[in-house]
Amino acid sequence: MNLAALIVTGDSALADGLLRLAAAADAHAEVAYGADEARPAWTWPALILVGADVAADVASAGLQRRPGVVLVTADGATAEAYRLAVEAGAQDVAALPDHEDWLINAFAAACEPEGGWATTLCVVGARGGAGASVLTTALGLASARQGLRTLLVDADPFGGGIDLILGLESHEGVRWHDLAERRGRLSTATLRETLPRAGDLSVLSWRRGEPVPVSEAAVRALFDAAVRGFDLVIVDVPRYPGDVGRAALRSADVTLLLVPAEVRATVAADGLAAALRRDTADLRLVVQGPAPGGLTPDAVAAALDLPSAGTFDRDRRLPVAMDEGDLERACRRGPLTDFCTAVLADLALQPYAYREAA
Image (cartoon, rainbow, N blue to C red; front, side, top):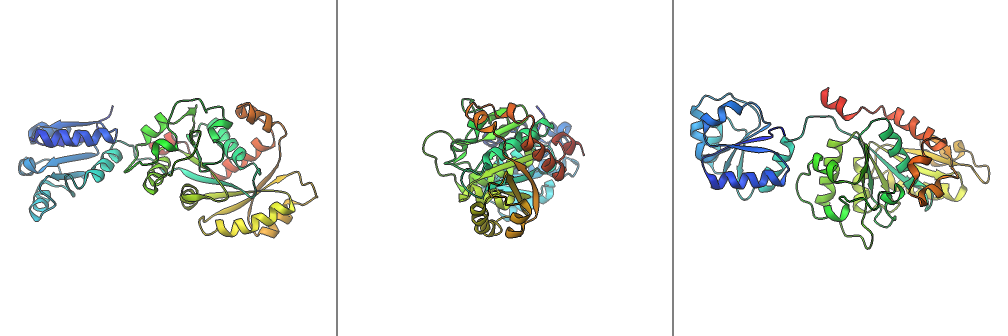
């Protein structure tokens, strides 16, 4: 495991406390009990935590000035602490126990590579049964087949679980219930390793039974980790989005509004589009055929005054595949798969490994 942080202190109690915070962030940290012991590894880790007890020794040791150095003190962020920080070449001061959450976040950030940000794509259906969950899942499957690290997020606590569509409902792993009270930064490595997944496709859904309320801090932590650790985040957002769905819409690069080619669905979509525009910047229309009354995709687009992301016809094989938890096989070909491939091409996504190396 790569060294994320170096703790420099002669105070064993301080060292133990900081190692505990590093463990909470899933970060690999080691302790150097003085400036001379710290010297060989001084330039390696992203984060250096210097105890106030050795700050003067670090200052006089002639160690290279570098970013990512934090002075840690148990005596509060006093003027003396800031004077020591300047002398030791530290850019920040963290006072324990008040700044424990901040330090956990710093540890978590230090153990992650500097990559780009994922694209976030939301999908909303104009009416119940429009097929938004199927479209969300099909987009995720198509993305994973292209070698993209993909996360499907189920923002509908009453939707039955998007993991069920993929046949992953019995897989062990983290669900929203496990993250409901999460505080502070969430490690992307932990997120990827603990979510149910199939290959490059990871899924965050709900446990069976009554859903639990998810704190605002937990929602922020999840989406922050998701955009740092994946190539594409796709969120199935209900028409009444709630806190999770609204947070997803506000972070979305693109939101797709799925409208069946029906008069009633188009009328419903008109009001929904107005509400969605308050939370999402780039709203695009997807029309699903066939049209029972001959309503054309162009007519739907004109009625809603939305740019088109494309159209596709409903695939009669999919309801059976969903019930059998075998949507992956059914989505290997067909009009929905062709549409998803076109959407992904339009987004021009880059794999995480490529972004990390860039």
